[in-house]
Amino acid sequence: MVTTLYVGNLPWAIKQDDLIRAFSQHGEVLGARIITDRETGRSRGFGFVEVNDADADRMIQAMNGAELQGRTITVNEAKPRELQ
Image (cartoon, rainbow, N blue to C red; front, side, top):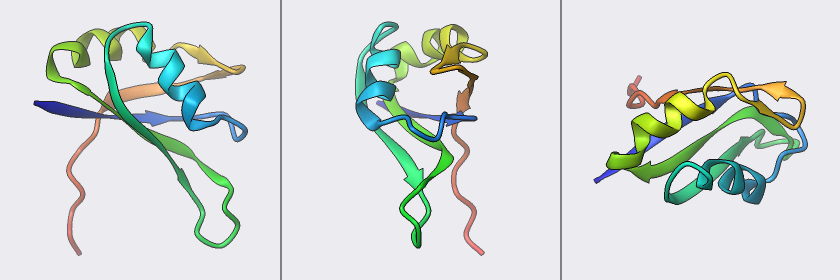
C-alpha cells in the first residue's frame, strides 16, 4: 500500500528531484509533487511524497524537523481532502 506524506515549509526554490533525493535516504519514494500557484506557477511552500506503508513512519521520524535548503520542514501523514 501507499502512504502520502504532507511536507510543509518547503523552500521556494526546491524542485521535485530535490524532494525525492532527500526522502530516498530513508526509504523508497514512489512519487513526489510540489504544489504550485495556478496563476504564477510559483511554489506554495508545501508538497506531498508518496512512499510505501512500511517506510512511512521511519520517514516521518527522520524528516520531520529536518533542514532542507535552509528551512526546517514539517512532515506528517497527509489527511484526506475534504469535499466542500
